[in-house]
Amino acid sequence: MSPGSLSLEVTTHDLPLKAPFRISGHTWHNTPVVVATVRRGGALGRGEAAGVYYTGDTAAAAAETLRRLAAHLPPGLDRESLQQLLPPGGARNALDCALWELESRESGRPVWELTGLAAPRKLLTTLTLPAQTPQEMAAGARGYAAARALKVKLTGDVDEDIGRVRAIHAARPEVWLGVDANQGYEPQSLQRLLPVLVECRVKLLEQPFRRGQEAQLDGLKLPLPVAADESCLDLRELESLPGRFDVVNIKLDKCGGLTEGLRIARRAQVLGLKVMVGNMIGTSVSVGPAFVLGQLCDIVDLDGPIFIAHDPPPTVSYEHGYLSCPPAVWGGGRAAAA
Image 1 (tube, rainbow, N blue to C red):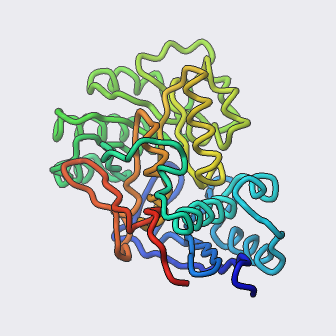
Image 2 (image 1 turned 120 degrees about the horizontal axis):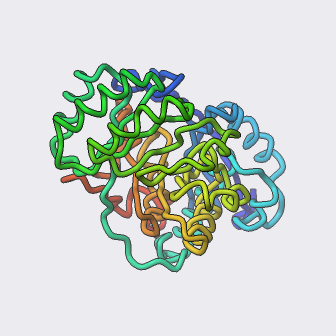
């Protein structure tokens, strides 16, 4: 490898969780992730991805894609050419974020500056309550004593979900509260849930219906904003949201990296949509790029590292309900030896 050439190293890690994480239709005990590390001269950049479980985009599949690419890296590969080289998904996310950090370290400029954003501010973030019994979730809500915003995972069992929402609201009536159905509802069951969401002052309903069934929202008069998560994977799908959704949840694993994530956020604002940033479960390295994107967002849901048993330092910090990302975590513009 010549001093000025680019190399790509691909590693995988299986991150144990502190406790099982349950949503509608799925329970996780661990999270596999792939890490892309690019090197050039004396600098390196990193990106981490978990993939998108509901599209079959696994960390293992992303790693295989990146290893094939590493064997024959195109000359002059950069973030722009990458957008055509790989489709949206975990592989492109990991490599795109690695290229952002490499540019940051080579230039000595933080990623936020490279994107044209102002210096980052700490972000109010939701903390997620995985689906458990109403009593356990109320205890979890009280356990997040510093939280100012909570996101509640629902399962589609409307009676249980009603109990969950009421128990959490009773435990923490002062917090901003959102619910995430993860595609678990049908129109009839949602009609039973809606009055309880209003009663408990829920501020956001995320992805009530299955991906591909967005037409079920047509004609429904919903009393609170609705966010698209599974219903919008990338920039191309964003155009279908206005008129059905009020908010788009951008996840870098879905759209394939910070480059496209920024484009989605800016286009969503033009379309009159609110912008939300979310994440899969992973280490602080995966949160760093999303924290940059979060500077453009109305709603922030970046709590993935709190669920893993060990988040290698340096790490993001959660204090008084706010997320901060120190420069050393990712993309801070500091040179690093390869």
